[in-house]
Length: 264
Length: 282
Image 1 (cartoon, each protein chain N blue to C red):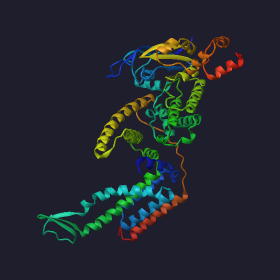
Image 2: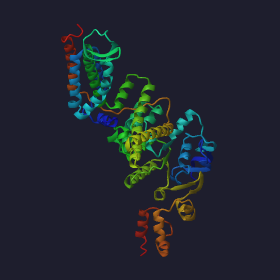
Image 3: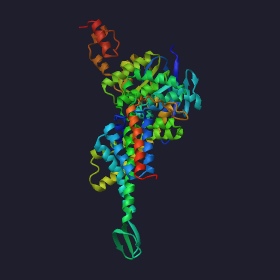
Image 4: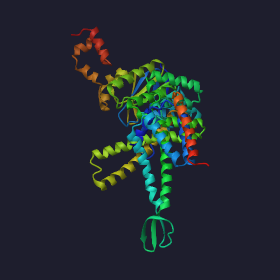
């Protein structure tokens, strides 16, 4: 899975015709609930969002899980720091799951950190599923339109728009360079791959600068003024069914949170 | 006499760090209302000249005149020039800015500060005229090269320029797309826009143009009627531009046929066919 694929999926998903503001509102409401709520409710959010992405939006399950796993790998990379603690030998007074002695110090995993990780894991999963919902179902151009309507500073939206264009220009260039290197016998073995990757990055920079200059001329030729404004042509239809489900679902989640002991 | 829409007088330009000047004393004018072609080999300064055409580059020496008046290199005046002179780059990637097709077409109109209703109406019209209606909401990086070219052209034509400059518009296009493009350019010309196309494709140049300019090494070598250029074979050959295929075919015909057909070299296959059907030479 790469950025390109994610982008084209967001343009083809089944929920594309829903108003982007509604989808963003749902995702941000859930994100807020996840941040203030507890594990049971977060689990419910993960399940519900997965249903939205996989069943309603018809995003292939494999791609959705790939996205979640790739993102969770960052969580995994942070695990050692969360689990392991250190102290002078003999000063450890908590229940310990595992311990290693290093001279006069001891590294240990306290029982209490498992529950911390458990809590963090579900919080991460739930927020990730909300972000996945946004990324898979709202095309970037529409996110921009919503930001513009929310009176986001013009500078920010302009920069986001240019960055979005440039990401794909750069992906295309780096792909072309990579193909060129491969077809001329590059990337053989570890050392060669490192060297070729270095050349690729340097070339990418040079070409990006050239592209930037050309784009600058292009914008001047089209009469660039102080800011970039564009007209949106997206046609959206509200859907009673989905609106009803979102509202009912959010209320249920609040109830669940209350019933399982949060906020009491 | 046809009036001079855009005129370059003794232009000199050298890129910073470049060894040779790209333009060295180029003088050239574009007749209003004609289909013009600027011929020249790669690197002869065509693209640089075009950037002078709407004021993006200020000449280091020489002058650019629009309808007889020199260009003013001030922000507001230049903004106006970019509306009057539409420039289509060789690489459409360089002028497509927004994220979707319809958004990109509207970009230039917003720079003109038109009311939103007017913009919407104009964009709608151009979407239909260029057959982009179905792609209106497609992101630009999903388009093919031909579609990107069409979009770049649409984004310029929506501004209703008086002069359209196209830099190698047929590069990398297949024959079918090239034909379509030329048809679109004909329609644009019929609606009153002067068109100047830079190319090195002799076949396209002589089939399509009503006025031909030839550039070499930053200078103008020839400007005038295409027929006149064709008769000057020695000049075309010395520039290594090659001859149009049709000219070679014409020259292979027996002398007597050529005389009977009127002596003028046909500009397109259709024209040759018509000549042959009217005047039965065999």
